[in-house]
Length: 276
DNA sequence: AAGGGTGTTGAAAG
DNA sequence: GCTTTCAACACCCT
Image (cartoon, rainbow, N blue to C red; front, side, top):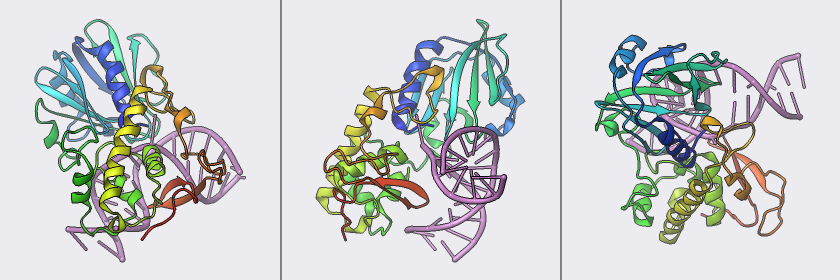
């Protein structure tokens, strides 16, 4: 489900409930969730370790333990729930973590796309998928000049480029649609056609949109809801995403939907003219 | 009622 | 290399 704001919300929520809990074991109903390990090795490794802190980079969630970090990516529909040990195993619950206090943490993922990986604590950025990731909009050195330096002579549509996590970490389909609306940029604008001013505005808009979304606890659309049943409120702030045919908030032109790089893309044909 | 679409990403193919 | 397409999977909506 999540982009950066949703993962951040999940991180904060889980942190309140999980920090200080000690693992007994982990049961894998669907072992393919695990990368680079098998259930027995993984369970033995986390057994006895205490969750010291919950962390995040981009859309990756970190359970920081005594000696290891459990890196979890929720992909499209991953969720975590805290339940008593005797709660029935629900459909789509693929991993059950047991704690010494008798509680369990259930990993629920309808589409089974999510991944989990255990790395030595402090080595998170070396994990596959995290190495080579671009800066987060909240990194100190992130800004217009950084984006411009990543652009080079790319001819890709700006929408696809912003979704590339090696360029910028944390933007997904919802927020990219919203960022481009705020910047008045057509999603298919070739990166090469962007000017210095555009990169500055993209950087600023990325920070603004994600900050606001974090403040509101993320976005809850369709039937999606966050871990532990927490729902966000940013869906009330969406201008274009999932609003095909609805009037643009600025000019009342019907919002258009097209496919860019195979992803549903929403924009205002009047406010976001193509350039270059 | 089959097919397309879905808050993702990495491997394969061009 | 750089870019695009597709597969992993289950469910919902036309």
